[in-house]
Image 1 (cartoon, rainbow, N blue to C red):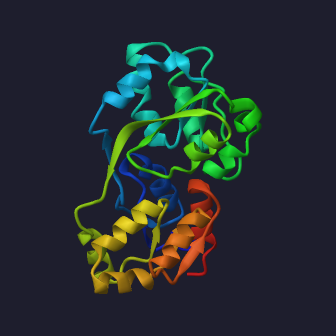
Image 2: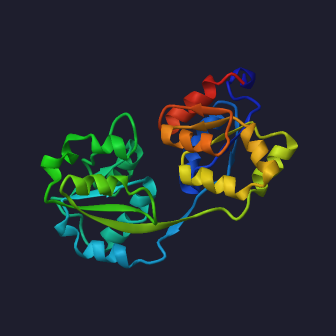
Amino acid sequence: MSLTLPLHGKTIVVTRPRAQAAKLAGLIAAQGGAPAVFPLLDIGPAEDAAPLRAAVARLDAYALAVFVSPNAVDFSLPAILADRAWPAGLQAATMGQSSVAQLAGYGIGGALAPRERFDSEALLELPELQAERVAGKRVAIFRGDGGRPFLGDTLRGRGAEVDYVTCYHRSAPADAGQLLALWRAGTLDALTVSSSEGLRNLVDLLDGQGRAYLAATPVFVPHRRIADVAREQGVRQLVLTGPADAGIIAGLCAYHW
């Protein structure tokens, strides 16, 4: 039976942060593949908790709270709800439906999110984030340290007052030994990459031989922006899939191995 599954005999690397890797790894296994989890971003609490504490204290002043990722939900909501109830008039927003479900798990329903593309650009297309709706309003953006300024800059351009709230810390893995061992053994068939930052982390970890391995390996990415970075980093066998885990697994299963 397993011989008929599209990913039978394929070792596919899942590079999502460890807390978000299980779903895609399970989908790969269900299609006969062997998932290898190698997070390209290690996620932990913010090194300075003061910005999150300050945001909790003034939460009633915000009209909109944007959570840029599942990590932003998980590293901010427990601290918020341990101190106070979620304000009844505060609208939550996020990039994708998985984060909507996570917010609902904390008791925060009705979050705004795009339905098709899961990025800042798609979120900013929603009617609720247009200038006539956000001008003069205060917005909190919960995110990791650093990150793209595009969302905040655009909202400021539309007249909103924006505060970034750093609630988690991202760091690169110490080395790529796990991947190099698979490559040298000839048993690494593909990588899935869902973060431009993570891809840059990987390239920085690799020597010339490692980068040659990467260039010759199919790399599946769910967003055009990541694809652009992959090309810049020398990836030659690039596959742009649909968004999120569903798009990645569909792309893997449709690939002509």
